[in-house]
Length: 267
Image (cartoon, rainbow, N blue to C red; front, side):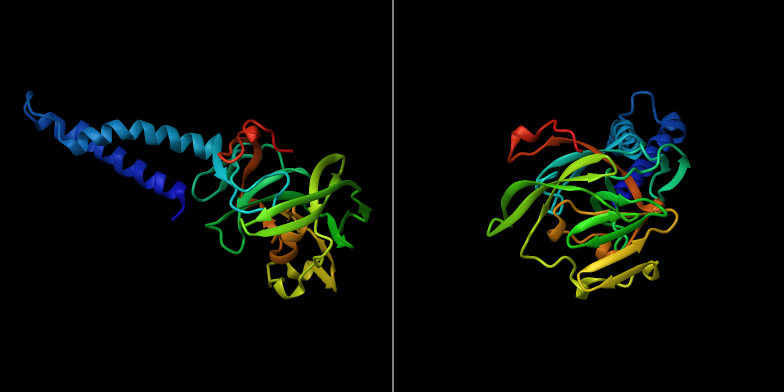
């Protein structure tokens, strides 16, 4: 079950019990009668749950990075903070936008509900905006026909799942003027065609061997992982609609395995 929904149910229960006791049951109790435990607990927990619910729904929400699809930007075990109002204020639970603010920009690291299973949250980098034509050829990104420059930084090796050693090449990639680090595995295929799903607006994409090209529909975004050959992203499941956006990742607040990462900004 969605955590926000759980919080909302708890908010309704504790708030309802508190109101029932305060306005209906308490006036009927004797002046020296002890307050029932369930009323006392509801009165204590309601303001706490309300504060947490409002904070997570409209301001900042924490997330934990479970996979290596965004290495080197984000490491497995990073706890990050996500700005919930950067892209507009949304109604909790249903994600309906109430107030328009900024739109996602190319290069943003964004959290969103996974289109194939909206109960799961994903994090990737925004590569294509509505109307953009995004192509992936020879493990290089083209946006509207313009190659997004890559600069080789050296080798980058890591251990996946505590068992498998992974060798990659480390690059700096420029997305419309915004630089970020990314990885390419020279031994991996650019695209695994067998893993490409049938997704909404699939007709806007074309695949040819290890190359692909998509025109991003209105109100949608094209997402890629920074660990380019170890990421299931828009190449495989399509576009992220605006109503599935959660927010913009902006800071790492904890990593119990590497305390030096605490406080790092996410670029």
